[in-house]
Image (tube, rainbow, N blue to C red; front, side, top):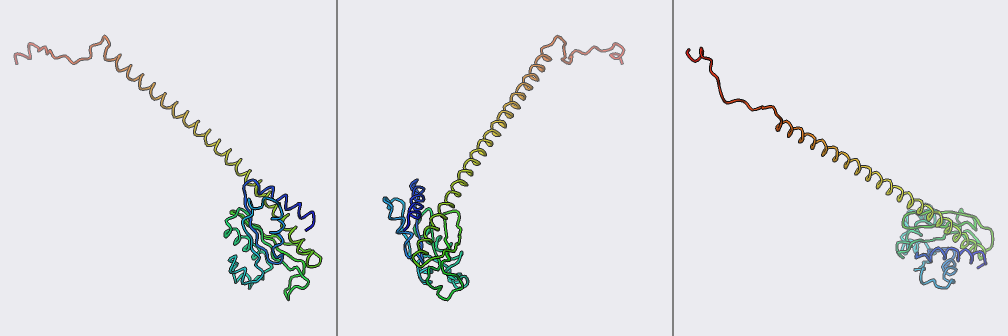
Amino acid sequence: MDEEAQAAAARLVRRLKDGYTITIAESCTGGLLASTLTDIAGASKWFNQSWVTYSYDAKIRELGVDVKTLEKRGAVSAEVAIQMAQGALARANADIAISITGIAGPSNDGTNKKVGYVYVGIASRTWAISEATQIGGNRQENKEGFVHFALLTAIRHWDQAMELAEKNRQDEMKQREEDARIRALEEIARNQRAAAAAEETAWQSQTWSERNNGSENTDIGTDVEWDSDSANE
């Protein structure tokens, strides 16, 4: 493996060392990606397991790739790359999975895809993508190029996912702060209404008391003075 691919593997591993785990599903590279990653010391902390599923049957049996997708799209396709990655992710219970499926050469085995063509699948627990590229070289060069491309693709999408996660975290924090501010304002408004109501009640009670204790006699008299003429009727 060339130095650029080794450097890319080290860059990806630095991201995994924050407490994440990875799993690999390979076809045409025959385990070369897994080997490149596990060449780095301490791999047992972040590398769960991997699969080399060369045949259709292996992809279906080991990774759960849909047989209809294989028949319709072929093994070298975006759909199969994603399903390989998702199948490995679920079975290894990892945080991220990388899959590789392509035509390493020297022939294309009767397919309509060119030698050196590859799809890489990347899957996490919340998203999955596939990207393709064309590499020109012999079988070994293509396999090494596929691995390098897979590592660079994984790093790019990992960084994008982390940036998006951080943005979402910041947005959620701002939303919580805004919700707390609104709740505080509502609480202040309720307290102000309660204070105003209490003041109004106190004023009404005082007014009623003053009326009851005033100098004017508001009682209805009980003595009746009869008119003398009326009394004699």
